[in-house]
Image (cartoon, rainbow, N blue to C red; front, side, top):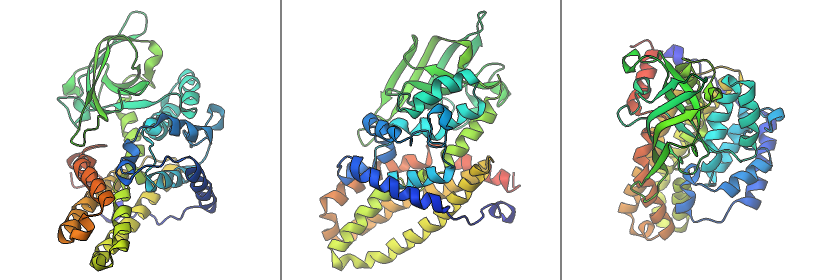
Length: 386
């Protein structure tokens, strides 16, 4: 444990990030739509293409991508600040989220010059929204067992067949970055896996939205039936998909979005407590949550520093995600107990509706980005226990 924890070095945001925070706050004051808390609680599941394009107009979609591709060329600390501010106020960021956080950086790192020139400027303009095709109906979080297959064609292209599931916003995105098998079979595990970029408007692609308990349809099942991909759909070397996916998941698991999924509920709860002095006994609980958040934020910043140094802190990111998810799920549970003990709090309509939504979706927090069991297996290997 000591060797792993020693990689979490206490890190402060650089002064330029503090100045950038003021800029972001001013932008949000001008451009953020007026939404009730139960809508703001959706935040990084809230899809608003117009808001995403307004962010892109400031260079804040693809914020870490180089200026030559239309990005802002800022460091991961600036993205950390941007994400904190967006999630703290419940901005609807889902449209551009995956492209900014994962797909763009992955294409920059592994993609060909042609792929970079085509996709990255579109991402930075808010004109290319991406989804991620990892999970499959019979695989779940066991990504090494994926069966969706891309077979090489005589002209150099690929014929794609298979299915992906739990794909966020597939029905509203332009492209999918999909993990597929290009050689061998499921028993070969990591060997023979590659990533391809799929145009979701291509013939043979079928997208079926999946409704959740809250009535939303963020997720979809995507089927591929003899979808023809050009040769340039392959990202990097054939067979390098496992390496790429691990790098991608480090981006996905390490940021403040793995801490702040319930933050609008927490803020709404605090605002309700201020209006009901008799409920101040809950301030001890709030204080404990704030202390946990401070520690988790410091850990997330330490991982951001590793990313800024060009490293791929896969195990550290898994630890932050696991602990962060547990924290996020504890907030609605504690808020439910508080409302059950105090009728005055339960009478607050904004708090009640926000809690109802977050309680319904909170179980998914420990599924997206890798289940708790998968993450703890990775952490155990990182500690030398497996």
